[in-house]
Image (tube, rainbow, N blue to C red):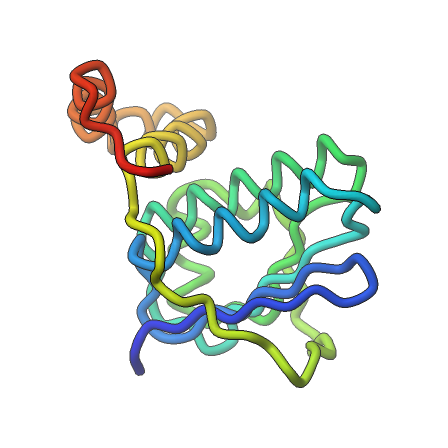
Length: 166
């Protein structure tokens, strides 16, 4: 199944559906959509991420989920709700230490019918990659070890002015 992300807001609730093999390629556009909405009024009530058709997530996408969760908590909107994650998705979330942070919902949640595809219009810049991996590194010493080399490379690129658009 190819990579696909869908997004919709309804009644101040955000809905994201991830399908297939989700990688950093669509993260810049999703980040822009979600954080723009977090910064707008009225406040977001809650957010659901459906992983029932997600076969793989890369670390950038999972770091972005951590960022969404942090912002939801800051807004007083509760934890990020992850809906019916597949076994591989749940293992990946567990492996990087996300399970204690988020709410896992095993029951089906009614998502809007007219979800919109998140298209790849923005490039995945160094800033996005750096922040996503810093979010993951905050979760555990294992993640610090796992991503320290990547973090160093990304940090040096930001110091050298090699940042992307984001």
